Length: 199
Ligand code: GLN
Picture 1 (tube, protein in one colour):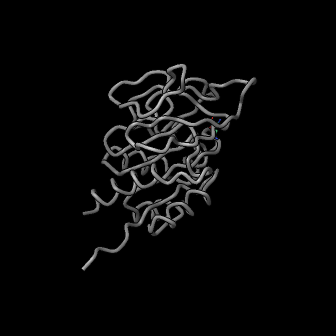
Picture 2 (cartoon, rainbow, N blue to C red):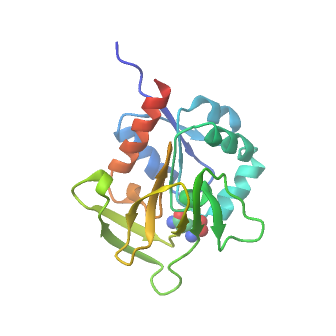
């Protein structure tokens, strides 16, 4: 008998929630849009979408989700954050708005809006050795950068050496948006973690 597909959540307070839900469903996962603590309790993993990290942070507090998410991540819940989601998984951020908080978990420092005005958004092909061939088509949209890594492992860097993807235990974070470019391998990697933990 095969186990039912894992149930994964997409934090659905703001941002590109639908894109992530579509990729996860394409990969066979059952998806719950998480807006309240009871929904968080149903899931075996959580995707933190791109969007505006300061807004997601504020709404998470308003919806009573901040502490439950923090606790679940600290307890080993697999999580995958893209762009604003990476910012929310960082233990430390720079360039945050006054009072901005994160859920933490990834031992990294992430700088918000690291590409400034000149090239706020761009696409590039990234070598991600852990994912093999082909290169990853990566969309950077007002993207952050990983400025410093502690215990996390870099997975990808730009040509100039700046780190744009990391993982640590059950946590995965990318500064870019794989979900908008038809790239499935990061989500698959996340779902592997979810399946391993649920088993
Ligand atoms: N600049 C946004 C932030 O700071 C992130 C952009 C994105 O998620 N595409 O939250």
